[in-house]
Length: 167
Ligand SMILES: [Zn+2]
Ligand SMILES: [Zn+2]
Image (tube, rainbow, N blue to C red):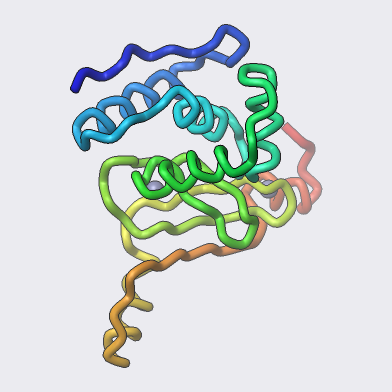
């Protein structure tokens, strides 16, 4: 299978991050023999360019300029595919989606989520997941999926709360 060339419509900000992520997703899809259809790509691109976790309904409005009205079920199916492939993660507490920081390498999802501005950071590695894995195996329990979401204040919001001027 041949990876399709990176195509981004002109009204999207064509930053390096987006091209890199799309190229990576194309390569992974080709390697796995799955189809990153134009809609799946557009949904993925909309999640990558969003600087906060984005919900399905915000995705629908983000897609509207390019595709007109897309049925919600179509977007949900595209999201299921992207989550299954590890290209995006679902933030359970917000029912929203973020692009994975390291798609292609299987890992547990761990997030720091700011209560004030919504900024969400994915933490690579299994530092947070390890202790709960130990505790569950002590109960003879086999974990199939683990999502770690820590909510609090991000560095920027903490600085602002402490009276520092907004940068
Ligand atoms: Zn990830
Ligand atoms: Zn914040």
